[in-house]
Image (cartoon, rainbow, N blue to C red; front, side, top):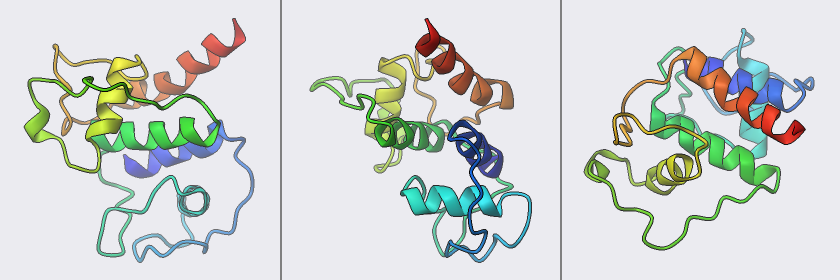
Length: 143
């Protein structure tokens, strides 16, 4: 879910204690995800799902995941540059305007995999895939 993915980001960042109320989302209270969401909001990683909501229990889509990964990598100073001409794909019309560069970036750089040669922006990300986005990068940095 969106909440679980933000928890993975927060844990990847060290899981530092954070004020659970430091966010504007009306659907996040003092619950299992509040600390991680407040932390991600403070860092500028997320601005929510619209209308003052975060939607923590909604499955996370590939385009949402890619946008969060790109912002997270940018936060750490990793290269998030997308070369000109990279945005050419068979399912580009399905990508939200706020996510196209991030989803292309994630697939082209290998941060996320393609799905049968497609970006598949609205398909859900499994927990195993999400966890792999962090463990594979961690292993690569240890080599």
